[in-house]
Image (cartoon, rainbow, N blue to C red; front, top):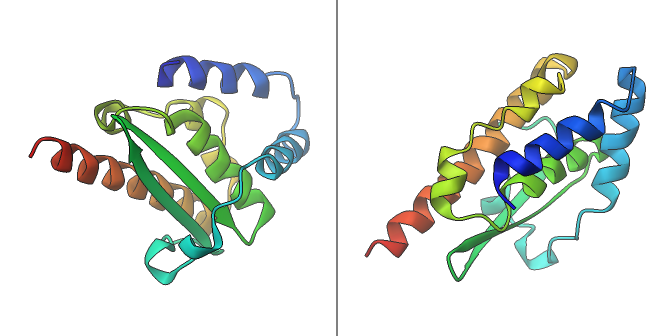
Length: 141
């Protein structure tokens, strides 16, 4: 499934909720479904800089697709990174690099986060795109 199609699904799911408390609950519940990252990847080098809470992100290239895995010590952050993984995992490096992740704006996520959480969201996206760039570079050699 293309990133845009996944984003449209996410936007549609969030449109079922009228207030942000329900949306937060959905994000938290979604985070609980995130496959756990292997403990060996919970290292300082996999911590995302700029997040208020601890977020570990790992990526591996399987064939021509990137598989992202993550965990966080904060339930809301775990849900947010889970949404990003849902959109970007199992995609090619080019697709990840070219993704706009419009769903973040469309569901109003950034405007309903504290400034430090919003910075963390930006840092997560940046790190995922950096992984994609590294894999693209590696594949072109």
